[in-house]
Image (cartoon, rainbow over all chains, first blue to last red; front, top):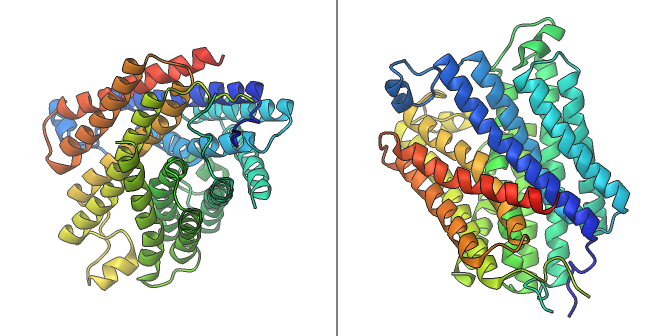
Length: 149
Length: 149
Length: 149
């Protein structure tokens, strides 16, 4: 019996898995980064956490909010890659194109975090890093849409 | 050798892929929409962006916040569909039911964005559009839960 | 013809599907919880909703914000599990280890919501529940990264 997954190229699939795992780890690190900033700035969003640290609730610390914006931007973009990257593989793309798209998305999102929330670098650094994942995601989504219309 | 994916119906799977791609594109458009509103209203959340535009940081512009609430509502609902829609296919649902569920979820989420963030239409428009994706997602989740308990 | 999915163990996969469905349902419940709190406290974020209820827009009700923080924490963690849990299965883990990891993640995230947003319990309850999903997700991500490097 054959399945829709029989045609998956193993090089492409391995690359997808690798970059998914790398981006999952990158997103997990955001939680640590937020926690570190909250402790460094004594800026806690939960009354129970503020109480333990004997401070008042702070919801507008600029450093904490910067990390949270970077994290939210991840949430807006990276799960889309998890979903569409997988379906894109099923459209039978060229191996080198697919592997390079995954690589560009993965590296761009890592750079995005670095220039947004770790060492703040003036624009267009953040914008370019964002585009590096955004446009490949668009491309993959359009390919999937057309393949399964 | 057989796999758990051998039984996937190709009509159902194609419909799933199509609507996933459509919703990925819909979510990608939210970023453009947010960017357009930020520029139109000169309301930037990042100091470096505000500086380039020679304005102060604004975090409470009602039009920008509306688009962001619509986007957040997407984040709360659409990735759940990506995950549970895929697993629901593996429960061997009726083809027409599954295809119609995917269609209702996809169209509802697109309408939700239109009435929430593009042309604001009074309630219950937004509520109904939200339910159109919410209840089918519940149904699929319960079916998956019962199938794999 | 063989596919990358042929080696999936069905016990592990069923456990994955079950916990994904349970967590999708858990996240869907967050929307109900937010809605209930908004109505109980008359704290609506949308002008059109506030108007229907004849109140002003309220964006800082502590009970509503608590549920929203719990929900956001779900968004930061649970979709990562959906993605990496699936890929982790493909690395051919021991059945009992994989099933227990999925169980720990699932139960931890449910407990996290209960102690964060339903019955507020002092720390370290929330922190421990969060770790119960966080560290297994890290473990799975590293395993996938190393398997597909």
